[in-house]
Length: 195
Image 1 (cartoon, helix red, strand yellow):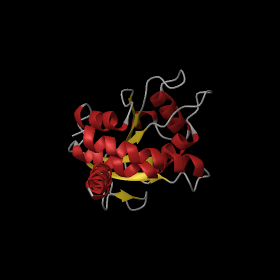
Image 2 (cartoon, rainbow, N blue to C red; image 1 turned 120 degrees about the horizontal axis):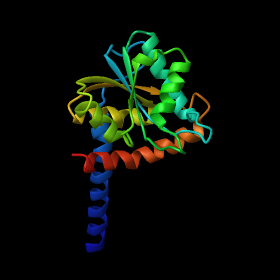
Image 3 (cartoon, rainbow, N blue to C red; image 1 turned 30 degrees about the horizontal axis):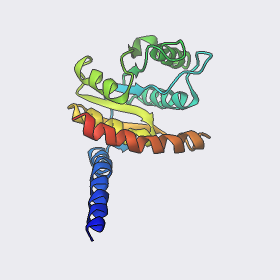
């Protein structure tokens, strides 16, 4: 009987440690995950990095995010785009690569702002709040990641909406599935560590 109690207690503890963070991300992002046509207009889109290929081109998943940001800009939903990522991704500055991609697809250089300190979601959101002084933002990332990103920005006092690139529909099902599995653990970490 004692062994059963220990097992049940362990299961309850595991449920709290892992279930509460998922619930937090869903609640904090409720009605805030939108599409390009229905997201409220904000001054700035914050595009989170997702890797650079060996030849200095954005990864396919990052290209999807950048295409969403460009669509927001072209629709008049944002006036500026902050590209946030690592200064060192396979020998390239991820934000510089991101800016080049946007500019080469018609976004004016003056509308793109670099953030080379956004090495993870928390730092990108924190810099948006503290360094750029944003109080409202549209976070652009991949669908499996958008709820945590919105929740973290809101935890920092930023009124955030999110628009996610549908990687699975864009032929990246395997990457999307792997990202969704990783996202579960990242959400647990975000909830318990970034308090």
